[in-house]
Image (tube, rainbow, N blue to C red; front, side, top):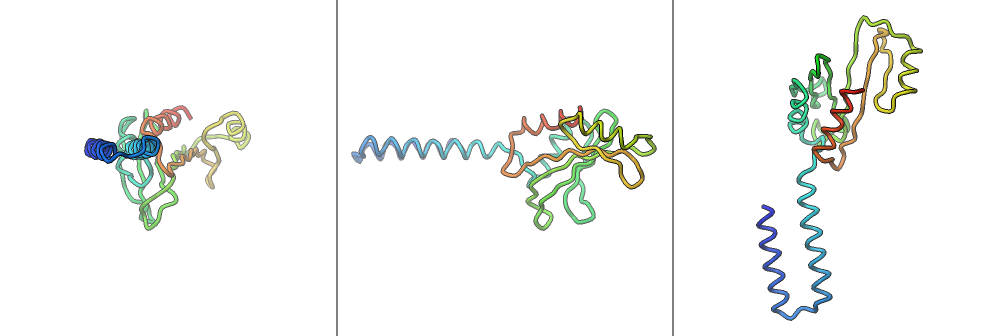
Length: 165
């Protein structure tokens, strides 16, 4: 598809030059056309939360991952990295689609962790949010804004960060 756009752009350049287009005016149009072409190429390489399959494919590169639906019908990914189970929740969805954010989440039951330990963790760590749930089990979450998309490498870096958090 990109080559069709390039061929069409080259055709327009030749047509404008043959028609005697003012060079300055043509130069501006050319730069604008190239900018639009490059921005469409860049946008096609972005990952966002509107395509849960892309996210589960990236998650699969870090361990097991399956795509399911939560009780509201929104996508949810269940996975395991280095033996630790986690979920990826999708937020900001419209009619169970076109989501804007994802949130990594995990928890540990039966662990004796104090609120003081949680507060210390939250104070010392930059990424992720820890808390005690209603059963006093430690929970960990990390939200990633994918609205307007990020590069695949950026999302992979977020997965790397999640493994450290």
